[in-house]
Amino acid sequence: MAGVPQEWKLTQGQDGCAVIVLSGDWLSPSKLPERILDGKYGEVRVEGGGVQEWNTALAVFLFKLSKECKECSAKLEMKGIPEGASRLVALSMAAPPKDLRKSYRSPLFIVRLGENAKEFYDTCMVGVQFFGELLLSFWHLLRGKARMRWEDVWNEIIKAGPKALFIVCLIGFLMGLILAFIGSIPLKWFRAEVYVASLIGIGMLRLMAVVMTGTVMAGRTGAAYAAELGTMQVNEEIDALESMGISPMEYLVLPRVIALTLMMPFLCLFADIIGVLGGMVVGVFYMGLSSLEYWQQMSDTTRVNDLLVGLFTSLVFAVLIALCGCIRGIRCGRSSDSVGQATTAAMVSSLVCLVIATAIITVITVNLKI
Image (cartoon, rainbow, N blue to C red; front, side, top):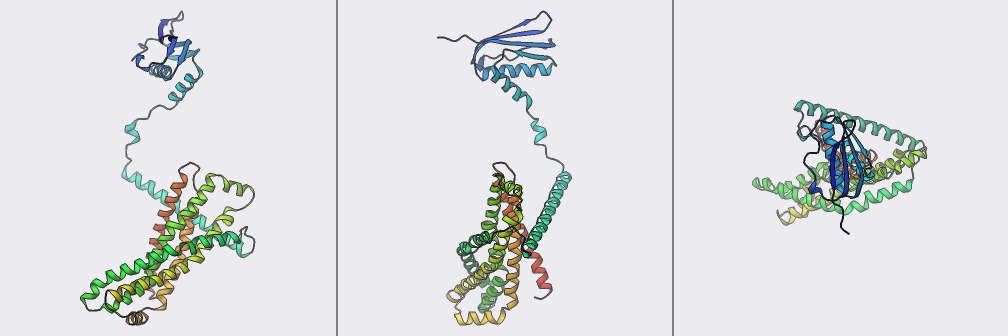
């Protein structure tokens, strides 16, 4: 059975208003008029009782009519319009298109600078507050009042320690290898190949091993903390803990901080040993040194303080990485993409904090001749 073609008629009512009568099947958007009103009516009434079947063609017609009425300040009244079409028109008119020139207009440089400065200040204040809450939770732990399971600490130790050992050792060996190769270039100029052992000993123990270990753990463990806690925030698990009177700081954050702080010095120590072995491979098989010469030169020029500075730096890195990961996860949003944003922010924040901490520790230890 053939459908009734769509049709609309514009007439003038007894009270002087425009009356638009709709009928037929509104299924063809190509037959819609460019202009419906001529702008001389103060009130428009639409009667859609004759509409049988319809699709978006009817909604587009009504949207055009609503837009014209809004432009000429005419009152629009709809009767007999299908409920679905009315809702579509209401939604379309409720969110008018924005002026793209305004939305993409870049603010002044001084405005952007001020906004970025304020955002950086707010981020620092949030970090200070979070660190204070962590210290308070640790104080509760020392007093035996913290609601924390030591089983969680052990599970996090396994994740942050043994499961990360392979990648840390691999990176440490390669860094020792690369540092020895780079150092061999100027050392050969002066016939001082034996000092490659000093370069590896001081460079790896004091700085390179801990920096590379911190970078690996920031991307592996810190990002994992943000993803785990962020997912719990999206699923409202953290809200459930708070509703039961359990502090998320004590139950979720404290075990992760303790586990990473305990494991980081051991990972750094493994990276030191493997990095020194990587440097020895270059010294023995590329620069013609004997293993005895390599170890003797390293023991003569490397101090215990170099190792202690590296281990102390690893402790600082562990706290910073755990804090950045946990704070980004705890303060994650509720939307679907918030977990990914929190993970990325945790990685970036951790690396920035590691660089700043490295610079501060290096300046202090050099000036104090440690």
